[in-house]
Length: 135
Image 1 (cartoon, rainbow, N blue to C red):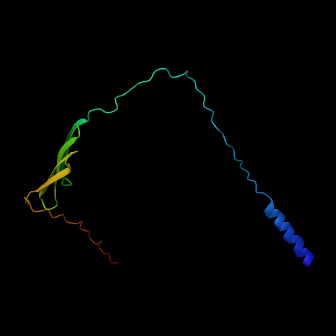
Image 2 (image 1 turned 90 degrees about the horizontal axis):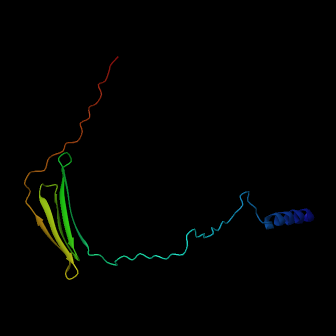
C-alpha cells in the first residue's frame, strides 16, 4: 500500500513539474524602422509665443425649458475680461462680471436683480385610473 501511494505521489509531482504549454504560441514582432525618405535637410521654425487675442459671445434663450443665459469674453494679451448671466429659479437674474490678469489674479463681481415674475408652477402629469368593467 505504501509503495502505491509513493508511486502515485511521484507521478503527480512529475506531472505538476512539467512546464505548461498553450495551444496559442506567444510571438513577438519587433517592427523595424525603415526610413523611406532621405535625411531631413529643411527645418521649419515657428514662433514660440503668439500674442493671445480672442473674443466670443454665447447665448441661449429657450422659452420651452426656461433656459436663458448669456456669456461673453474678451482676451487681449494676458488680460481676460468677461461676463455671464442666467435666470434663477425665482425669476431673478444673476450677472457675474470678471477680470483676470497677471497682476491682480481673478476678480469677480456678482450682481443680482430682484425677482421680477413669480416662478411658474409646473404641475406634474395627471394619471387616470382605468374604468372597471363588471360582468
